Image (cartoon, rainbow, N blue to C red; front, side, top):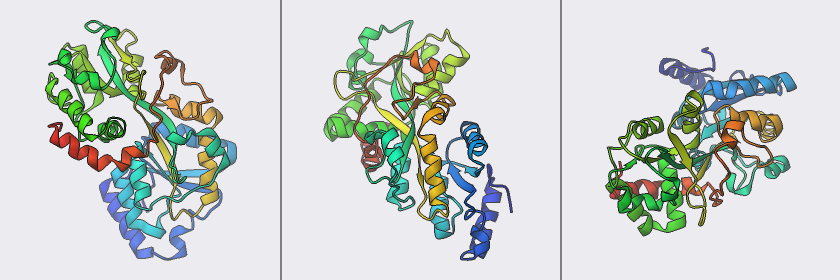
Length: 345
């Protein structure tokens, strides 16, 4: 049977065949039933989770096996495996993906006092099926050579005429932008949000880019002056080039706050080691683990008691949008339709 790390498509097909053949037998679930082991399906890359899992194993003796893949592929896999899944935990990025997992009944509610204590309400599922573990801000990035921070104010302001031919955006196909627009719908209403998005499109200096790094490279090159990116992408570029002529701006500080999203996790519906999975989530939500979880990707800890890494702290404090991030998933379909109507692709 292939290893549980970084499957190829061929290996995934092979595993599916094995699962179907042994469905319902004790042999297929024997490993997951071991109280000293856990299996995690992760949409976060290996280098962002392995140091944490290794540390947990050192502290507790619990072995952690993991599969990394895209969020969509992991949700499909959990659905196909059903009660025969070896997965105890689903760990993924974006509240929209976590909402989808809960909506598809792939996660179970967990009543944990430590998780409720450490993770603010707006960063966790109201029914306790998933919990944020790190926070990223989807915020404005600008050229420090061509833009004065005093010119910036809100996400909606980027739709104004003064930004004509000065805006760069990532494609609307990415869930990060879908979640941003979904949360704008909550705060601004559908009609106002559609006008904002249409204004962004009218102000584009170039067609939408494939990723956030390309947006920032375009700003660096003078192709545009401002964009919207996840804060950790900026952090990576800044780490490589501390003198980069870009900076982050925290919008909407006089209204509903900066749009934030999460990476987070939940216990799978058919987990074989629910208690062990809950203990791992509680460990990830506190202390040194929270600091390391956020630092590895230059994110903000979800636990407000834990300070961010020094580089992240240097970006300054901001007021986040505290509408529950589950709305990003609940309104995702509406957001996609709205962006299409506005010509944002």
